[in-house]
Length: 90
Image (cartoon, rainbow, N blue to C red; front, side):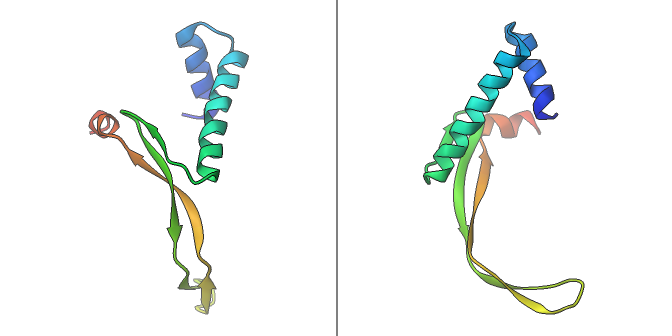
């Protein structure tokens, strides 16, 4: 399912225009992004939790040349599915 498919589904389910559904979905996604940028967790009960985790610096290998490269430390977004979501996709 793409973002556009999701917008169409939401618009149809709640009986609003695609524009309003798109605005609502974009607002939700922007709110999640802003919270993660601040270092906050976002928990959607029954769905899951979005959080930021730190990855340590490490040494990797360039697969084309075999040369060792240094990969710097970074932060990445992580999603942990909630219990209801896990049960739904069994």
